[in-house]
Image (cartoon, rainbow, N blue to C red):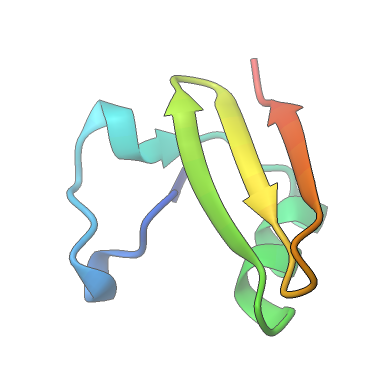
Length: 60
């Protein structure tokens, strides 16, 4: 489980802010500059790259 919005950036420790990220997604979120992720609904994430590309992933 991972915080969609990081705790150190104000993200709450609540069900709506947690997602089951695979190792690859967790590493992308934490190490690729400019990548942002937002949880649209539980289990569905919207990823945005620094160039503006968007991707939707389901973690369910």
